[in-house]
Image 1 (spheres, rainbow, N blue to C red):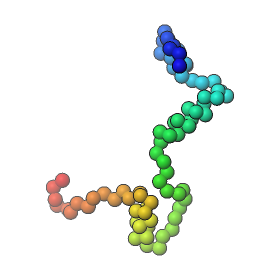
Image 2: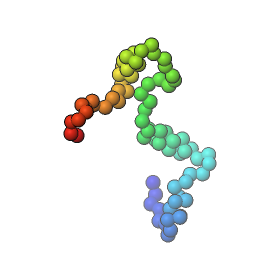
Image 3: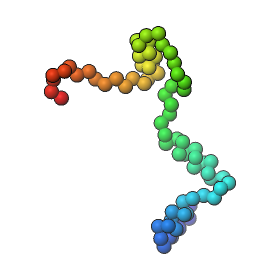
Length: 76
């Protein structure tokens, strides 16, 4: 990648944009997509007969987000 010099921040900002149809855009989009979190389960809505079934399915999918239980009246 060549070194570029800019006189203003506006020139530097414009240099970051790639023109429409540039082949490097797909590579940039792929790299940006790798930065985000991966979906942890299949998309959609699921019905369960009991809350226990739902919790077991959530635990099996690795989505357990239950906070630790703290008894009332204890200092934190």
